[in-house]
Image (cartoon, rainbow, N blue to C red; front, side, top):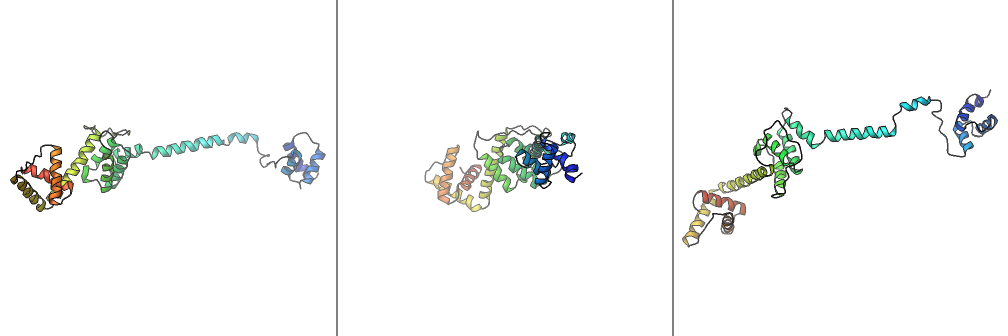
Amino acid sequence: MSHDEEYGLPRVRKLVGPGPSDMELMDLLSKAGHCVSVAACMFWGEGPVDDADDDADDDDDDDRPSRNQDSSDSEERRKDEEFENSLQVRYDCFFDGRPFLVGELNAMAAELADAGETGALMQIWDELKGSKGASPATWSAVERLHARGKGMIPSGTLRLSNDRPPQAMAPARRLHKICKGRRLSARSRAVDSTDEVLLRGIEWVRGQQASGSSLVAAGGKQRMAIAKELVKALGIDLETARGLVTKLKRKKVL
């Protein structure tokens, strides 16, 4: 028995079926250079037939994961990774009892501010001990959030930690107080940094009063009007002038 009869004929018969005779198949094998897949191709007049797995048990196919299964597993892994990296999960980590570096708290605070998660930001702010631990980058993010304006600052959607006291003040309101306090402190420091500004301010007020001008700083608009006059008269910036008005009122000069 030839090689083709012993090995090739059964394999090509399995590919092409019972139609042709053994002699016809042997002739195809001979023309195909004893290649079973080429012989089957010649019979069907189609593209090459892959017979690499013809000897495998058909039941083995049941054990192979389908493409749909692979795709489903991949999608599940992707969702798991997204969940593990989600803002909620990373935020929750700050309240599991482990100590965190100030830099890590600042990074989370800035990310929460940029995401509009004001409620969560206030909890991280408390972990930072307020402005004592806030970095310049964190302050920039906080100011950007505050700059959205009244009524435009969201509380956020993250689930807050139950391990911390509930917030007594609405997140947006507290954010406003934090930013306002910082602004007022900056004004006060600008005036306190030199006695010259305060002395010049007192001198200007006394001069205005001596000339008969009435300087009233009872309301916000009146105080702003005086601050603008101080800007022109003393050559200082508006924030310093507003701080100076506050100082003059405290000293009862105004």
